[in-house]
Length: 330
Ligand code: PBG
Figure (cartoon, rainbow, N blue to C red):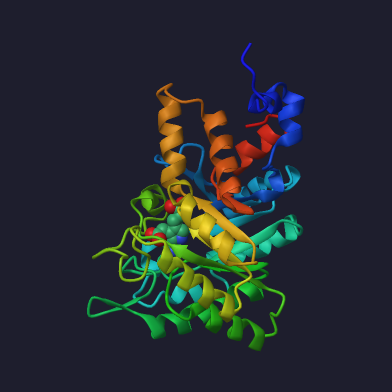
C-alpha cells in the first residue's frame, strides 16, 4: 500500500457520499422553457432544426405551459412567429395590443397564473429587415429603436407579462424600458436583460423557427464580439445601473467563462441561455446514436449552474424537468 494522507477518492466512494459533497444542484425551479407561438387553432408547425419543438398556436401553447407548470418549471420565454405581411421596417406589430404575443400572454396568465411569462423585447420577429432595430441606410439606429422597445415592453406588461426580456443589445434600453414601465404603473414587472449577448452562429435554428434571419448584413454592430469577455463587465455595470433585475448571458456553454465573470461581478441573479444551436447539436448527435441525449443535457445544464447561472433558459427544460422529477442525477 502507498502511504497517502490525502485520498480524494474517499469523497467519491458511493452515490450517497457523492450527493453529500455535491457543490451544485439543479432543479426544475432553475429552468425556463423558450416557446414559439404562431397564429391558428390546434396548430403545430415542427421546426426541423429543433427536433421536439414546434411553433404552436395559442391553444397548444397553453397545453405546453400546463405541462411545464405541473413539472415545477419556473417560466416560459415567448417568441412570436409573425406573418410576413405584418412585418415592416419599424416593427409596428410589436406594439399592437391585440397582437399574437399579447394574446398568448393573456391566455397563459389565465391558464397557468403561477408560471412566469417572460417576453422578448426586440424588433426582429416584427422587422421586415430581420434586425433587432430600425435600419436606416444600412445602419441599425440605436435611439429610435430604444423608443420602440420601451413601447413594446409596456404593451407586453399591459397584457400580463411578469418579466420583459430585451434581447436586442441596443445601448440604454434597460433604463428606457424601466422608465416606461414605471410611468405606466408597471413597477412590479421585472426586466431580464440580455446583458452579454454575443453575435453567435449558434442562433441558426432559432432564426429558422421565426424566419428572422437578417435580410442584409449581420448583427455585429450591436451583439458582442465572441473574442471579448472583459467588455461584458461594462454591460453588467450599465444594466445594473439602469435597473435590470436579471442579467442573462447568451449563448451558454461556450461562454461559461463569461457566466463566471458576470457571476463574480454582480449580486443580481444570473441567467444563461442554452441556445437553439446547442440544443440542435445534442439532438443531432443523439439521432446518430453518437451521444446519450439525456445525460448530455443534464450535464450541460449542471455545468451552466456550476459556472454561476441561477436560471437556465433551455429548449430541453421539459425533458430535464421530467428526468429530475424522476430522480435522475447528472
Ligand atoms: C433575437 C433573438 C435571438 C435569439 C433570442 N432572441 C436570435 C438572434 O439574436 O438573432 C436566439 C435564441 C436561440 O438561438 O435559441 N432578438
